[in-house]
Each structure stands twice: as structure tokens, then as C-alpha cells.
Amino acid sequence: MRAQWRWTQRYPSAQEIKRYLQTAADLLGLHPHISLSTTVAAADYDDEAGRWEVRADDGRRWTPRWLIFATGSLSQANAPEFPGASGYRGRLLHTADWPGDADLRGKRVGVIGTGSSGVQAIPALAEQATQLTVFQRTAGYVVPARNHPLAPTETDTIEADYPTRRQALRESYGGWHLPPPLGPVAEVPRDEGLAELQRRWAIGGLCVQSAFSDVMTNPEANAVVADFVRGKIRAAVDDPATAEALCPQHFPIGAKRLCVGTDYYETYNRDNVELVDLRATPIETFTPDGIRTSARDFGLDAVVLATGFDAMTGALSRIDIRGRGGRRLRDAWAAGPRTYLGVSVAGFPNMFVLAGPGSPSVMSNVVVSIEQHVEWVRDLLAHLTDAGAGTVEATAEAQDRWVELGNQIAAGTLYPQADSWYLGANVRGKPRVFMPFLGGVGTYRGICDGVAADGYKGFTLG
Image 1: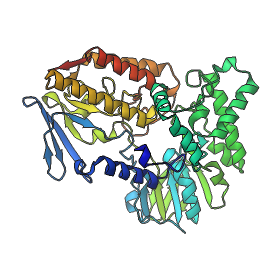
Image 2 (image 1 turned 120 degrees about the vertical axis):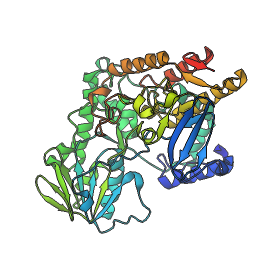
Image 3 (image 1 turned 180 degrees about the horizontal axis):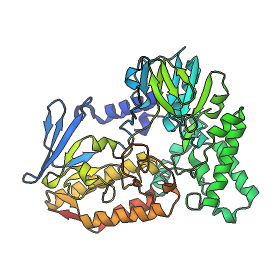
Image 4 (image 1 turned 60 degrees about the vertical axis):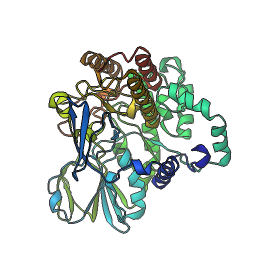
């Protein structure tokens, strides 16, 4: 595949990613094995047959022995219900379901949400709209992407050492190539630490968060990085009041997903962009012509919901999945998702989840994590075939131990101190449980490999 494809940018556009996927599907002959525009409505496990029955909403049915859910951790859009929205006469859009005919040039546009989706959309919308009004509930930390075209020499350097780089990703904490931390903040002279933060800011991307080894475990180290980023916000935004509203104050940096953007803060210096702080003046209702906050009415031709996703469990919870004895997955997860290794669920034989809750997933370079899951499940299925086994199921005891380990690791960090989608806090009524595994990509891979080497300890083979 590498000989057939070369990326053109550090952060490729959606169009380029789509072309890559099309190329991969063509080269690997995947099209006959893919059913597009298909909504899976239900999946039931038949105890006697040892098979699943999968049903689509159009009536089609399949009866596989092995069922693998690769539904994505950030695939189910979260669209909160706002009072009066049904009577709004303008266009209501969601960043996760963007139509091809959405032309907002010359329009008065409102954006609700300033997480990753909003950070990416707002600068682009500001260039199109006559007036852009950004409705922000919680300010986030945004680091520069420093996106740029990839020179052939840069790509040549990467490909020349590709196997070594790939192995380093698999053994790393997050599955990324990042500069190593300087060490604990207390052991780094202040001037040296600030210089390192400045160097990482110039590099761009997520490396700012890992300047010190204890950023996500030590409040003092976290405060040094957070104060540095707030200083960058104040320097970038001309209006002091707007700058302060954009400065996060209520949670540690990194405890909510760090956003990567291009000219995000500079966008608020444009004459056609206005920031509305919803903590000070919350939305009361949509009106036929726009949005009313507690302070005033805003006339809007279109409203863009950049409200993110029902993360990690959202896509699965919308399928009626029933395991052994007809038990629903959504009932098994009523108090929060429970898995063994993030890949299997007790009471749901022959079912696997890729990059879901209980795995590094969204805390990692998710492509690296997906590859590891695919390879591990592939090897497990080969083992089952060789052993003549028809079923495999995680034990409740192994699942309980895994959930407890994940909780212990998370409790030793600053991550639970933010109302983040890692905890499900962005979805009304969702249980507050920290869902990803924070032990790191390399450590997690070693655990999974050890389970396999021990005859798939924690699983029952039948």
C-alpha cells in the first residue's frame, strides 16, 4: 500500500482521507465484502446454534458465528434537544452529518460548541459567513496544528525507516511519535521548562501536553502547562474580555481532549466573529429567526451544532444487542460499560468490540490501537479454529478484574477531574464512568499478548 500512496499534508483533508480509503478498498478487493448504507438494527445470540442473528432495518439478515463490532468510538452524533428548535425556520446542521449542499456564504451563522468539531469548523465558517456567532459553554485548550504540505524529502525520511517507526508506535504510550518529556516538573528549571514548552508549541500538535512526565498526575506540573497555554490565548486574541472568556479555568489541561486547530484563537479578531459565553448568558430557546439567550436575541440564517458525539458506547447502544439468555447489552452496561481487555463482554459469546471502552482507544493514535485489536482477534479466531472450539466468552471474574484495574489507573490521574466525554458527561443521563484504558498502548499490547500466550486466560472456550 505504501508504494501506491503518499500523503500530501501533515493533517490530510477529509477529501484526501476519503481518496485513501477508496484506494485501499480497490487494491485489497474489499468492495464485494462491504454493504454500504446499511443500518444494523439488532443482533441476537442463539444459545443452541452458537451463532448470532444480525438484522438490518431493511429486513436483511445474517447468521455469523463470530460478530465483531467496529462501530467506532466517535461515530454516533450527540445532538442535544434545545427548546424551540422544532420551530426554527433557518437551517439546522450538525458537524458529524454535513450535507454536500451546505453553502453558508453570506449567511448569518451560529455555532454551538467549541470542542474539537467546533475548533475545526469555526475558522472555516468565519471565512464564509457574513456574521459568525460562537456559543461557548466551556472553553477548551487549543494547540496549533502547524499543518503543512509534506515535502518529498520529509516523506522519504519517514519511509526509509518505516518498520522501526511503526514498531516504536506499537511500544509507545499513546501510539504517536512525540518528543520525550523532560522529566517531573520539580526537577526541571523554570526557564528550561518554558523554553521546552515554546519549542513544542512551535512544533504543534499534542506534544505540548507531554512536556513533563507528570503533567497528568501532578496538579503543579499541569498548572505550568495550562498557564503557558492561557498566556498564548491572551497574546493571540486582541480583545481582553474575549481572551479571558476563551481561557479554560475549571479543569486540568488534557483532562478534556486537547484540541488541535489552525488560527482558532486568531479567528476571534475578525470583525464578523462574536463569542457568546453561555456560562454568563445561557441559551433560553430557539426562536423562529434564531437563538435567544438570557441577554438578547440573535438572528441566524443557519445554526451549526458542533456538539460532538455520544462517545465509545453511543453506536453500540443504538443497536438492540442481546447476548446469552437474551440479556441486552444496554442493560449489562446500564451503570457504565464493562469489558474484558476492552474487546470482549461477559455474557456475549463470540462477540468482539474494536477500540471500544476498556481499551486505549481514544486516548491513543486510534489507528494503531485498531490494528492491534484486529490482529489480536484474528489470532484468537485462528486459535479457536485450531482447537476446534465453537465459542469463546470472557469470564465475569476476568472482566471484573479488568474494570477494577482500569478504574485504579484512572483514579491516579487528573483525567476524572473534568466533565469530559471520556466520562460520558456530555450526554444527558449517561453514567459517569471513565471509559478508556489509561495504561498506555505498549503496556496494553503486552497484557493482551500475555493473555494469548497463557492460552487466552480469562476466556472460556467451548
